[in-house]
Image (tube, rainbow, N blue to C red):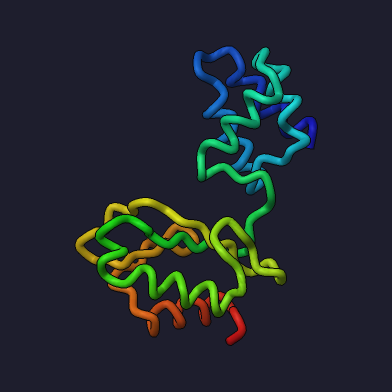
Amino acid sequence: MHLRLEGIITPMAAMPGALLPILHAVQDAFGHVPPACVPLIANALNLSRAEVHGVISFYHDFRSTPPGRHVLKLCRAEACQARGARELEAQLVSRLGIGFHETTADGSITLEPVYCLGNCACAPTAMLDGTVHGRLSTERMASLLDSCGVKK
């Protein structure tokens, strides 16, 4: 991991504002930002570990633990809330047995909140593995979960 990480950090370390691009590249490479990477990133950018960790914890898209095989992001913006996102959230919590920012015990799905997917006209909306799904009903959400192999 160390050599791979250096290959990510070194080309970007000298550019202004390198921390965010480095964190994105690390997450793209590993699926998350492993805690063991924080000291190496901090050292390369002459930052404290606390500064690097603060950025990771501030931005919701950064993870410090591996995600599930599928990542499901449920929109919680006003348009989606008004059109049924709360019911979808209740369905997800009930069926998956997890809340937001958690992964199922079998590692199949990570559930994350998102605060607008830019698909308000087709609310409620969710994103599964990078694909946006609009006009969701509890039936359509159940279908998405079935497609991920989630047990009923």
